Length: 163
Image (spheres, one colour):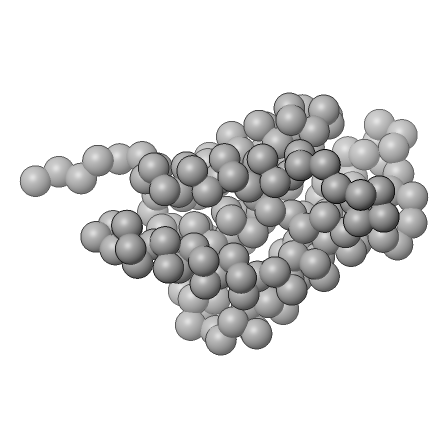
């Protein structure tokens, strides 16, 4: 019996939800601290399905994010691809960490994502502005337990046969 290659529908649905959360309007005061929803969801699914979710998925999702946000095409795509490559390298260890340690790793990964996205912004003449540019690393890390437990529950209900 052969297994279907591709992204399972619940994974694709959560990626679309993360893209939607990236463009949902928020108050101006909260905008700089918006969590990196797509990065969080990609990190989880890469840890859960390292043979199905990888660099190509991250790159395509990043291109969609670039298009939705009206940013330089490839800016988020390359940054996400690099982050997911790192997750693929460390996922066997990351999976066995307790959630509070995963939060610290996620904060570092999100900060690296923001740094990688900052480089093309600086080249095109759009520097970050202030220290609040880095706040998504903190908000994303704080939301990691919620993302982790929600997606783990979804995986256990609908996708257990794929692991």
